[in-house]
Amino acid sequence: MNFFDKTKTAIIILLLAVVTVVHHLPIAGFFGTHILHRELFFFPIVLAGLWFGLRAAFFTSVAASIVYAHFFTHNADIQTTSAALVGLQVAGFNLMAPGRCATKFSAVV
Image 1: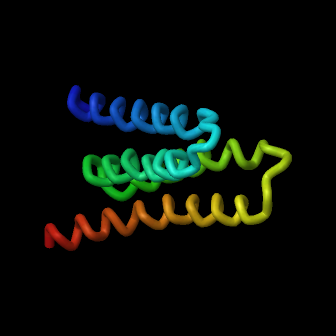
Image 2: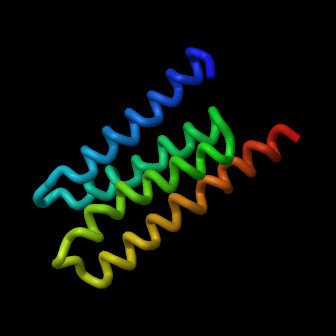
């Protein structure tokens, strides 16, 4: 792994960490902003897929799923509809990774 690959890996990890912190910050009364922060989890997944391929995108999507769902699984007063939305978002993270890489592959062929 050369210097540029290490830098790209560090960027993906840092971006995932920043998005996690921003998403879990309490934002009273700004639900629309909270939804935007949720969508930011897709950026590290897409970057991993573009830079390193399917395997990296998949592992990044699993990491994003874990840090995204962690708050909701450890919150005792979660509502059923919120749990369903979290489940759909996590599924979106994990389905987007192979889809993004398949699109990249078909563009090359």
